[in-house]
Amino acid sequence: TLEGTISDISPKGCRIEMPIGENADIPLEAGERVRLRLRAPGSQHGYIVEGQVRNVVNNDVVREAGVRFDNLPEIIRNFIETLARGTY
Picture 1 (cartoon, rainbow, N blue to C red):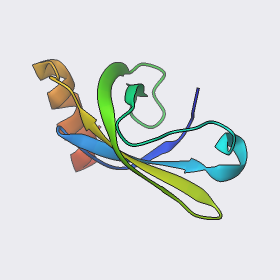
Picture 2 (cartoon, rainbow, N blue to C red; picture 1 turned 30 degrees about the vertical axis):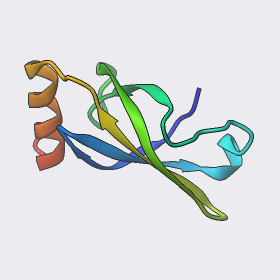
Picture 3 (cartoon, rainbow, N blue to C red; picture 1 turned 120 degrees about the vertical axis):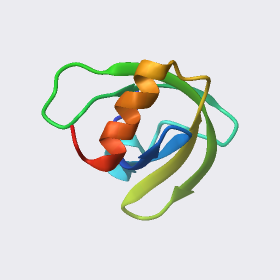
């Protein structure tokens, strides 16, 4: 399990930032299938979405991964649009 923070999100996908120290030994490569738990800041509830890793960039401090979502139901697309606007 990897943990990170979403730095950019839309109904098409997101960019996730993960600290290298905690996740350095867990591989993550472009093309991999992933499941993400999305939730608004301060919320305990969220949605599980599936997607594909499009790219991974590592530097000394953080690993960034771009993920493209698969066939989101309308309720989850609406939730993501709300997150993207910052109006949660």
